[in-house]
Amino acid sequence: MALGRNIIINWLIKSKAIKDDERELYEYALNSMVLLLSPAIISITIGCIMGIPVNGIFMVMPFLFLRKFSGGYHARHAWTCFVGSSILVTLFLWISTKINSGILLYVVAVISVVELCVFLGIILTSIMQLPSVII
Image 1: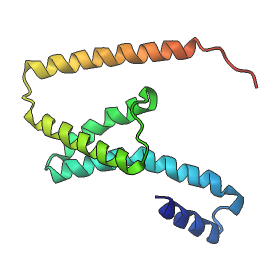
Image 2: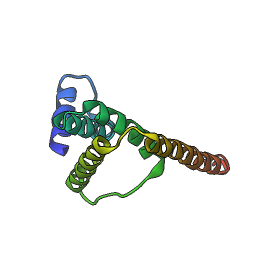
Image 3: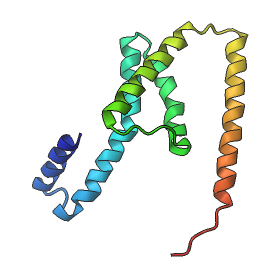
Image 4: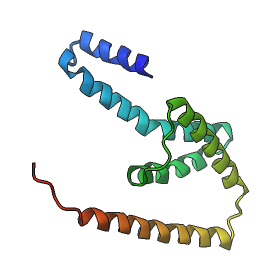
């Protein structure tokens, strides 16, 4: 990943689109963009391979939102994260094909939404109670 990032940054510097002293900033920006987009690309790609691209899109949307606030497991290496995430995405997409859209699905969805609202409410309340820091 670093090689591709360096190729892009070097090309931007050669093109005089950015200055050499801005290299570190743009490396960070490209790394952040890859980390933001990779779950969506993985989910949509696996969804397309399985013939259910819509499920892939709908599955990744809440994940991208929740990831910003929830933290979670952090692998030591990017490839470990990639493989683990791909396995989980594949598993959950497969499970999504096995769920019947009966009353149980709606009950689970309502419980999930309520739990999400309570969880985000707790997070936002704790953030609002943090003292502001004067620099």
